[in-house]
Length: 110
Image 1: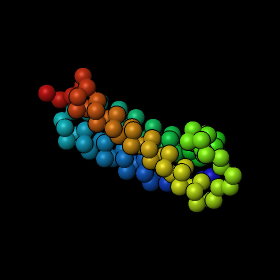
Image 2: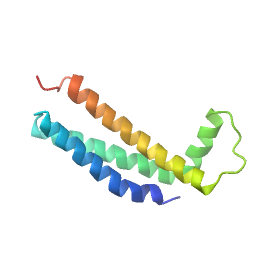
Image 3: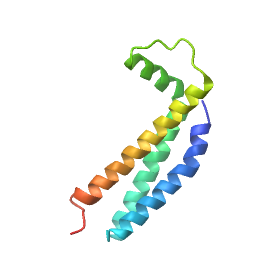
Image 4: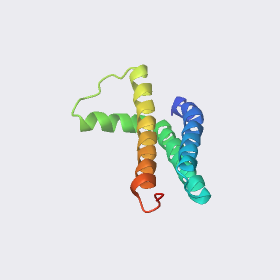
């Protein structure tokens, strides 16, 4: 278990949560939706980094199986960067999901 993704999540997740909350307030969405959307994106972001931290070697070996490359030797930098990339990808998907639902979903402002 590598703790670096969790440390990065302590900085990234609150920043993303604040950005989502500010955007939701800017779009004149209800206070309840602003809080729920920001909390959901923050939790998903932190969860993505936590999963990368806990299941790091499993995620890495699954990735190499999917691209059909044998992972004979992995450098520590390659492992850390792939785990951080996994956390950032989950965060980006959460923000994209918020953006789509707040702009085009049933709760979009008129």
